[in-house]
Amino acid sequence: MTALLINIAIALIFTGLINRVRAFFSGRRGIRIFQHIYNVMLLLKKNAVYGTTTSIVFKIVPVAYFVVLLCSLCFIPVGNFPALLGFDGDFVFFIYLLALSRLLLLLGALDTGNSFEGMGTSREALYGALAEPTLLVILGTTALMTGNTSFGRVVEMGGYSMESNILCFLILYIFIKIIIIESGRIPMDDTRTHLELTMIHEAMVLDYCGIDLALINTGGWIKNSALIGIGSMIAYSISGFEISYLLFLACVVIITTVFIGITESFKARNKLSRNPVYIITVDVLAVLVFFIAYIVTLEINI
Image 1 (cartoon, rainbow, N blue to C red):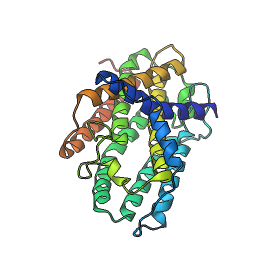
Image 2: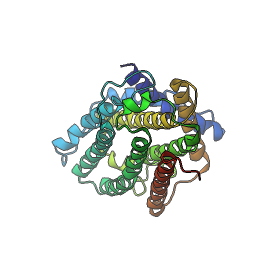
Image 3: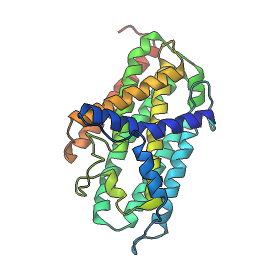
Image 4: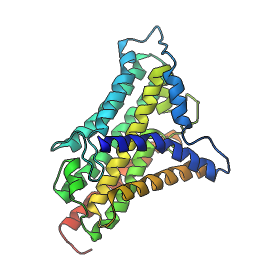
């Protein structure tokens, strides 16, 4: 339970930290660090409104989306605090949970019959199909180096080798890119825009409001926390750092928020035609990390 609470705390504070970093580098005072939570609390007080063209699918998607992502968070341990759930092969099960959450959003968007949400759905489906292999390759790299396919057993291994520290930083970099892709942040998308023709994730939730929109937004925070927890856990397990995991996790959260905040302050959004190339580049880097890990396991001097 402690691990779950820590992961939830990261989910709640992560977006606020990014907003503060972005405001600092933009020369603005910025909003409160917990303003996004306050906004969700306001949404929870409002009833949902449904269009006449939607079916029961549209209504159950927000709850199912939130529950699936919260379930995925239960598989992630934090240092010596075990996860609520875990078994051999939960690597693969976790990926299926993320894929299921994406499928739910796609179904909810398509159920409206809205052309804008249809465009967002097609883009999200393409980007998801390109991004999910990255996570699968990284988890395969972890299984190769640790000999385990369970998150809990990977954490128990502690440090692997100082020679693999380069893999640690590469994996953290890849997971930051995955978070940017999954959360639709710059340069993939701009969460602050409301131009339907250019939106990706936001276009899929145009017809949601009230408590339904609150559940979807909170589910997105949980997904970010899950990716941060997995990235930190994998990087720590194959590195030779002799520090506590909680300190390492805190450093990863700070580095991730600073990286994303600076990126959103100084970089423009990509053209939609460039996004697939952006994701494929991350895929290629993940494959490179896999081959480096294979060489390290064979103890071949490069």
